[in-house]
Image (cartoon, rainbow, N blue to C red; front, side, top):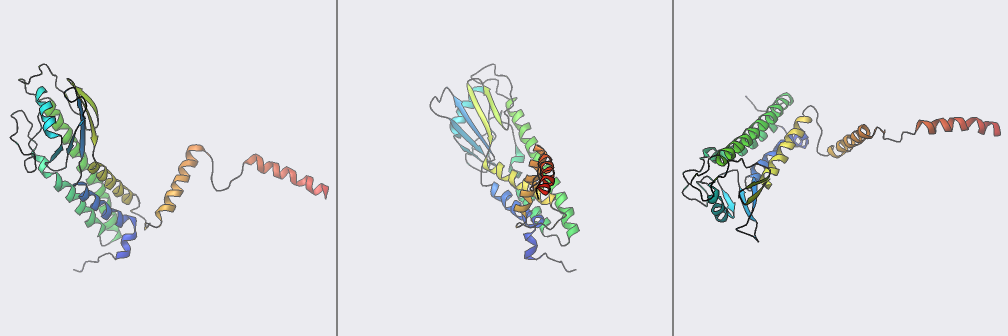
Length: 262
């Protein structure tokens, strides 16, 4: 059976071109941190420590200093296994085997995006875009839920023999500020996470335009029209040169007087 490959010009359409761009972003995101943590502690009065975590087993940044701080409260990071620093994990460290499968998720959704973009017919393309967007949202939602669960485990599996006694269990947030003992931490998404969000946004846009052949060249005009419609809805004012009804009435009233003068 012959496969009817779409032509190069077909990828000018948003519904085919955007999934390809999204696929590239998913893969590129693996090269950057997904999560960043900055820490201030009295032990480092003039320095803010930084930690970067990737979608695969890698921890970068001021790891040694962070580990020295965390041991006081009995909080331990899992062993990155394949990437430095590679160390003997503490017995109270939470095991996170699924961390090693992180790249498969990103590469998988990227390959699926390309596969959908190559759909031979419009109907298959539309069905593929729907499945792709829903599936990608589900995959990343599960990943975020799993990360938050592992953080909960780590924060509630503290070493009871840690130097600082009486520290209550806690859950580090994926985004936000939290304090434990004399350690203040700020969690933020990294560049890799933002690239992934942008890729999901492109898939959403491709899904939105799945029923039309809108091209990249048409997009600026579409965005301007959408913005104008939004402004009109918010302000209640019409665009396009509509005049005030009172002005129209005034001009109508003025016409007879001009005729009388003549």
